[in-house]
Length: 348
Ligand SMILES: [Zn+2]
Image 1 (cartoon, rainbow, N blue to C red):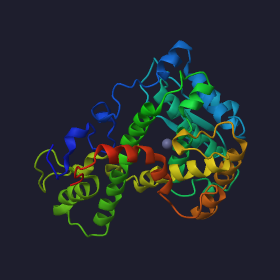
Image 2: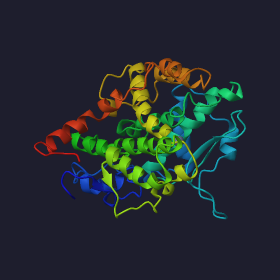
Image 3: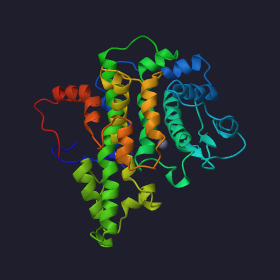
């Protein structure tokens, strides 16, 4: 690791250095503190895929949502089929724009998959709330909202929530909490500069500010500036590293993911406030809280029928995107890092 220079991208374990969870074992604040073994509890309790989905649905119905339609249970895919290949990447669908809600996922009894099913159902319940609107309005309030809703729900899958459904052990202390914040930050904070660079690069290309001969150099310039990472080996104008990212090759917009990472903490804070919760944000779960559910449903029901600041306001989250809630969420980790890195010159 060079001093005062970008991190060589190949050290981060992810081909695009976009999320940094693969270095968890190297940077965990309290490496000897065991994480709560929810996966073991799921196995011990013989939780199967259907039970995990029912638990996810229950999370939403306790907020006041209508249950999922019978067709959801008949037409969704919850487990990997034995007789054919399917794309197992989890996704949620409204197949006919009339609340034919489904998920497609190959669920294993793990904590990750339990969190993911809460995320996917976030999409389905968004579909459910705006299914009665004209078809052009059957969308998220803006590109970032749909992904943010699912993640907002996943933020409520706290150790306390897990304990309330029989999946948590003894209450863990401050060390486990800081570890958990680090885990989340390696995913969501590390992603922010990456999420921004993709479309920044693409907009410059589309605007003609970058010529084809400079495509690759412009890519690494942005990656270095925002992510603080450098190319593993020397690159030239003959290389085209942006094309290795699915969303570039397939022309899928990307800034939605950047926005979603910011919105989800903003949504989470607004819903926690609606629930009357006053403690630290990383400990808040809105499950079983009708007041939070009411706010959430007010926002989701608008679909894309109003400008997105109106939707934000309907949830009680103000009218502007605001990263303040994200800073608040990670404040205990930021404080730990400030102490840990005291006297060191961080950055590049
Ligand atoms: Zn999603």
